[in-house]
Image 1 (cartoon, rainbow, N blue to C red):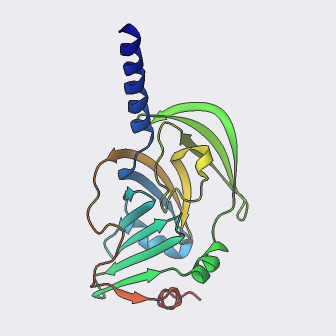
Image 2 (cartoon, helix red, strand yellow):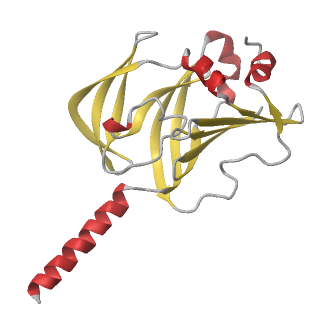
Image 3 (cartoon, rainbow, N blue to C red):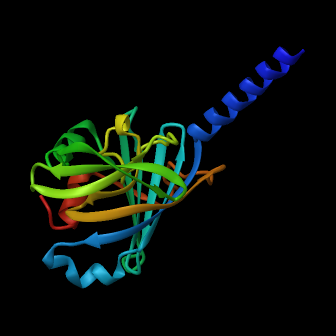
Length: 220
């Protein structure tokens, strides 16, 4: 009987640890600081100081809201699926862009190339035990620091996507969005159901191509 109780305790403990380690559905709230190019300084004050991510299974959705527009980046790294939603109230327009494999190849040229070196320093961020890594972005030769935890496993999103999952989940790090550097720190990770439609576009979004988006933004 005693052995039975011990086995049951081990099973229950093991189940509890696994449930804490793998979060299949929920939200992440980040606090963020932006470093923007000189030509974008005028809009810096309108950038959000917090970002929210919804995740479920292999899909994630990052929403960024400002006074001028809001954008949602939908990502599924396993299916190599990526979509961006733009809502621009001053234009009365909503746009949806699904990135084709060719589009993703074009974007890959501008993606960061990171090398990481593990340190020995540890601390706690948002209740998680984290390990420090020194990070070098090869293309710009920028150095930064990232902190990873292996306490949990969470679906990659548009902020964390550049860091390999083998290091753990990044909870304090620098990332790169549309020519800007973003320092992100996890404020909270919360398990729970995400809103319906978090990974799709409603019918009021106009579908455009990546090239059309680049023309609208003055790019090529």
